[in-house]
Length: 343
Ligand SMILES: [Ca+2]
Ligand SMILES: [Ca+2]
Figure 1: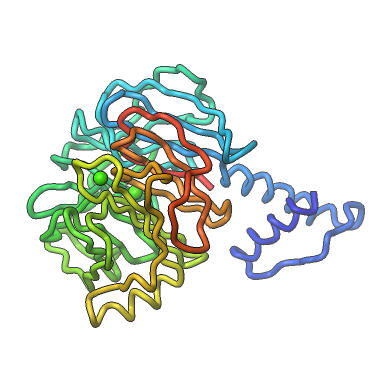
Figure 2: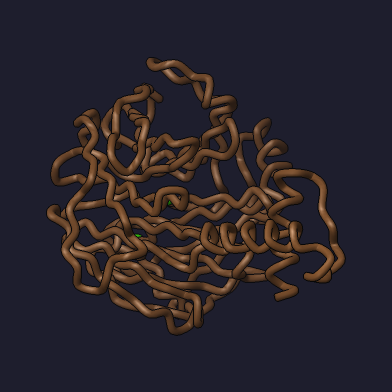
């Protein structure tokens, strides 16, 4: 109970910047307690325990519940009316999923996800306009989803989203092929496909449709070909995937960059973020071949990987230093193409 109260306190501190740190006596602080317990319930609900994995071959959305254990999650499979999916986002406010449906070239919404059971076939409750050709990664922010259109010479399509309606918001030409994106606050980070480049767009949220100029493009030393990225703002941790050669099924790696902001800003002049500033997971124990997407939870001390070549979901412990580590959890997910978490 104390842990829950402290958690609620943390939640209130974020919203009200005012917080009682002592545990409270229920008889004298009924109002506070009931508010705290409401907040606790809400934040507990907002903080889920699920890992969502798209497939680009199976027509299945896989959901893993890690509440009991990261090493032994329970799993449910949901059938979809399309086979080829990529970017996946979970909207905790609506208990909805937004998924890049590549078969129909549209972003779709899937609703009431918490109520679904293993084996259910579900239908989208909303479908967006077809404004991308070759959809890949995605990112969710402020009731909008940005979808990467991996065409020459590179596009981003963004949409207003909720569980019932998906409409056009803006379209941007970025001038290079993109694979994955992540919005943090007002800024956007993108992976340039077929390169080791991480690209920064400052103040993305103000950008109008049309040509979008990047603020900085930085190569990640030692990285061959990056695909997925995820960033945790609380701990300033960036994680990138390295698929190595697309045709080689055992040469993948993960790159973790702590104190990312200062390192990236420092690297903007030279155009390269050096090996010394990175932690690298690679080698025969890792099961990494073509890790196409990643989600990071410093809270759980874990990194979640959609591994396309080996067709798996992999969960790694957040490493303190580089090395050839075995994942703490590895399971088959046919066509694993994208991953997201709700905690
Ligand atoms: Ca590879
Ligand atoms: Ca991603």
